Length: 498
Image 1 (cartoon, rainbow, N blue to C red):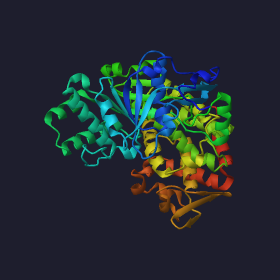
Image 2 (image 1 turned 180 degrees about the vertical axis):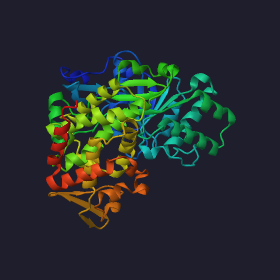
Image 3 (image 1 turned 120 degrees about the vertical axis):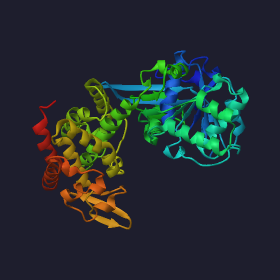
Image 4 (image 1 turned 60 degrees about the vertical axis):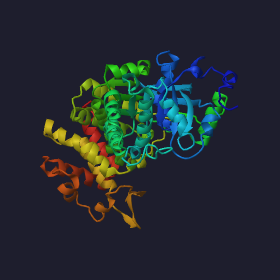
């Protein structure tokens, strides 16, 4: 039995959260660009939850911009199951939700007129997007194509059609929320849309309405939604649920959608009242810093350590006392205090606790080797600001960060080259280095030479008193004794800090 509206009554409800009785009659308040699991597992999750609580009372019409059929959605009346699995506050979470947030999925290529009809609806209040970072790019093109090619041109076409329909009234403006993983995503989209409007020589009245009555919001999304599980896990879940679902996805319990906006925007986004995971604030940078430093930064510094210790996944690393202790000390004593933004200890402590729950999630297979992708770029973007701020605040060597640097340099040591691919080998562990800077390390083995390269790092690391020497010392210990032995010496000396 496939999941669908007509089969809902036949599905056993004991282990399920199901749609409310009136959910299928709710108006389409949201136009969403993107069908991916992140949108279904985060924004649409919040909207569905709010609808069940009677707080939003609106559904999501989804635009599919890529080619291909939408039959997997139409066959299931756009219903899908979100299986929430993992740890929250140290406790196991297992929840199955049938979401009715999505009303329909419309192919932009096949039915652009249907999208323009939604644009002309009084019910429409919000546009949400996740078109990947590549989607928010300026392409000078006519918005009168059927359909326009680029995502920003589609947004402009929707807004222009709406302006014409409602003659530019204040009430017809929309809240537009970008969730693409780039800084200032909403404002970048707004800038491109304005440039496109100028390219299309749209009238001055529209330009004024576009900028005065529409709100383009930056936002930050944070939830691991791996998507459809492998065949064995899917079969077990469908047996447990009692039906087949071609759109089923797994998500972790942690969820955050931080949206930049004021009280007026919050009134439109009434779904935010349904879950503490939605935050509407005039400054969301603190949430970005917490995520980039404590979550992403810890991932980055730990990845070489764990992988070169022979540990494959993040969850398995959290069962190893030495690595778990390293992560505890790193976040509590070096990353948390050195975040280059105004944050409180209470904020860093709470976020660090949620990060450890997420790392230990038994339902998510997050490979350390995948986290080493573009290792160098991640070290520069995520770790260097922490390192520099740590010295600014404490003027001493952060030993956990230094050990992470030593592990990174060990990982980047080139063992051989095959064509344009570079490989490393550490004590029998052979691996591909997927890093645009890999060629730089070919033939380089001296830690001081690498760390003193101002052109490579964009800053003078030799000016940080003792840092280069400590990293070199830990690098030698890793080479001589192995990763776990070198790590044991470090964590044993610091274990009483917490």
